[in-house]
Image (cartoon, rainbow, N blue to C red):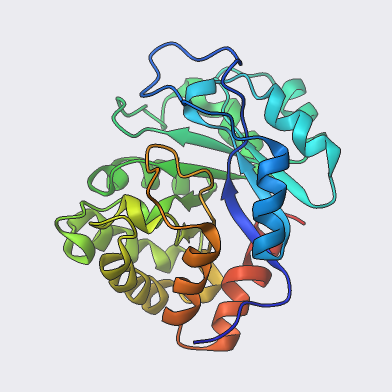
Length: 272
C-alpha cells in the first residue's frame, strides 16, 4: 500500500442546502445539508488542498450556491455547472471567470439528448474552445450513444464513477468495455470514484478494484482522477472519504501512478 501524496485534488464533491429551490423532475430530494464547513473538514482529513465541486442534479441549472462557495476560495476550488443547451456565451464567460471548468450532463435515468443537433452547437463550441470538459453521468450501456458526438465536436469528456457499469456485470459490462476502447482517443478521462455505486455492499470494493485495474491498463494514470463523491448521496452507509482514499492507495500498483491520479492529472485537467 502506498500513501497518498502530501496534497491531493478531490475531483468530485458537492455542497448544497436543503432549503434551496429544487429542480422539477429530480430523481430525489436530499434529506440533509452538505455545508461548506462540513466539506472543509473532509478536505482536511484527505489533505485535499484542491477540490472540484459538482452541481448536484436536484438543483438543476441554478448554480449560484455552488459558485458562491467557490468564490470564497478561488485558488483551491473549481466548479462544474449544469446549464441549458441554449445558454449564451456571455453567461459562459461569466462562469469561466468564477472558476468553472466544465459542464455536467447528468443523464442517469433520463432521455438521451441528441448532442449532434444544432441546439448544442454554441455551448459545445464554447466548451471546446475554452478547454473545458463535458462531465457525463449515465449508465455504461448508454455511453456509446453520447461519447462519440462529443468527441466529434472536439470536446474533452470526463466520465463519472467508473462509467457506472451494472454492478451485476462489473468489468464485463459491454458499456464499460466500450469505455475502455475510448482510451485511444486521448480525449476521455475517467473518475475512479464512488465504488458503492458500481459494486455490491456498502463499499463495492471487490468490483471497483477490478474496474480500477482495467481502467489503469487501458487509460494509464494520465487519464484517471479520484473524487470522494462526498456526501455520498443516496448511500448513507458509504465508507468515510479517507477510507475510500486508502482503498485506492491499496489497489494502485505504483507510487508514481498514484501521484498522477491524485495530484498531477487533476491539476492539469481542471486548470488549477
